[in-house]
Picture 1 (tube, rainbow, N blue to C red):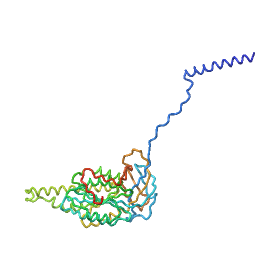
Picture 2: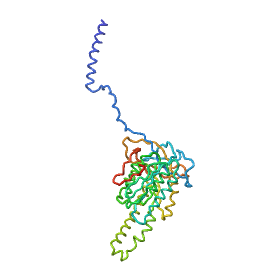
Picture 3: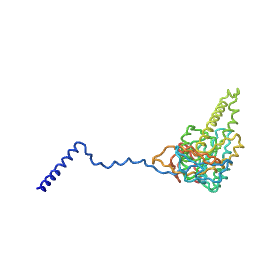
Picture 4: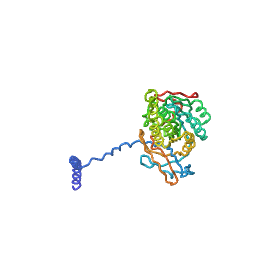
Length: 365
């Protein structure tokens, strides 16, 4: 009898338990089984890029330091310190851009050619160089080569004078076509006044192109002594003959216009050199200009390549501000203001001509 009563009670519990669970569930007091958490949003896809940063380093005596290691420098990108992987000496790829335009009879383009020849002779055995000139068009005198004799012959025989100056077209061609054909350390030596006969408002575009190419710019300009020679004639009071002769007045007006262009280009080229970590020289005499070779070569020889890794979005295209400082009191440095992502591609064999300009290819191209 007792056993029968226990079985009935157990059966009642079996029937009532699901009903109680159903009621509690409807009242909201019983939580549903937790579902798996939603997967987090995909993180931003990044790529690791090794940045090769040219940095000019000297000791207090103005010479290349005897030794240099990763702990001697601090590199920050966009304010964030970066880990330096290596500091290296590397051969230079030197691109010479020679002014062959003849905007003024006082301008002597032969000194541009002579300075380039001196610098070519001072190249190291592993250095490579290329040469272009700009005048009425952009002329590729020699492609990249280690052979000094080829470079010297190209400058001596293919350097031709022109009446105008396509300066900015030559810079476009250098940054977009020639510099991407070489890897490693890129240096550009501009020998000329920097006056453009057609377009003088492309500085920002050219600066961005040289930042993308990560090229260091050095400038040797005749502007200072050209202006000194021109100023007495250009800005003295006109004589009665000059006042009544339209051709004399036109000559004076052109001289004054060229003087103003020399002033403006001196400022912009100095800015281009400083922004890319280079240097600019504007001597006050022809003799000083002819002696610039040793200074320019010395500056190129002080460049090291600092390698560090940076994480950036896959589609990164912005300009990244760079600062380099030293941890040793005996060192002095100079560096470019920033870099873009490494979008410059090696395009060997691509000889596209600069847009919007006439172009003359060398005989051996």
